[in-house]
Length: 267
Image 1 (cartoon, rainbow, N blue to C red):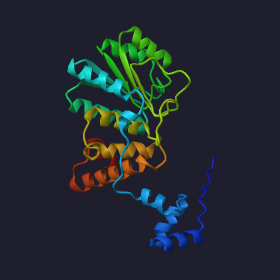
Image 2 (cartoon, helix red, strand yellow; image 1 turned 180 degrees about the vertical axis):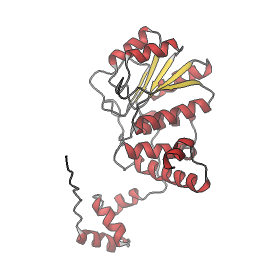
Image 3 (cartoon, rainbow, N blue to C red; image 1 turned 120 degrees about the vertical axis):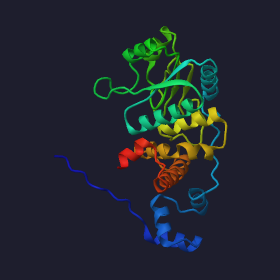
Image 4 (cartoon, one colour; image 1 turned 135 degrees about the vertical axis):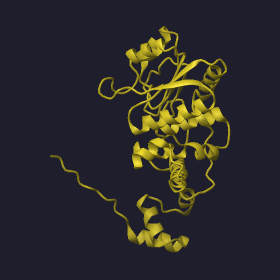
């Protein structure tokens, strides 16, 4: 039986006390900041910033191409499939994008591979199944960046693919209509550490073209769950997304307006 040992961060209490004194902070708050390597006033201001500005989703490579293709599918009532994954990030990514598209009137369904029978990511058998269902456009979430052969198969079957992923991109990108992944080498971003659900949210932000906080009211709960579950760094946009999402989740708990799936899990 394997045993794990917790390794706690060393916190310099003298530095924390100095930070508390210099910036008139509660000592416990100063301890939290120092434990995260934040000792300068400007960095602390950014950490607690309530007027955070989200980056333009169109700064992510291929976002414009992705939006154009999805809007075309919406206009022509083409069959769209959101191709997700079976872990928490993949499921919340699927739920977020599927919910937005269905609310926008899309002819949309979703596909989540079987963990035991199919494993992670796209596979040829699944693509052939989607072809039989009349799918014209596949949008991947939390996968797709490494599906070179599978996306070639989709092209052979006249199915377009938009990739939405957050995993590291290889030297060769899949030959999709659009490859939306902040880890592409041609993406010049200050922040790129989103979970898959965060990238899906940026895609929805581009499609909806509305206030980000309005979208957080609608999807913040599942966005926070997927981001936390995928253990990405809670800094930059991730921290703000989670903070807003937890507020949405708590309000839903208090008001009795939880999503059915989340209520079932909590029960």
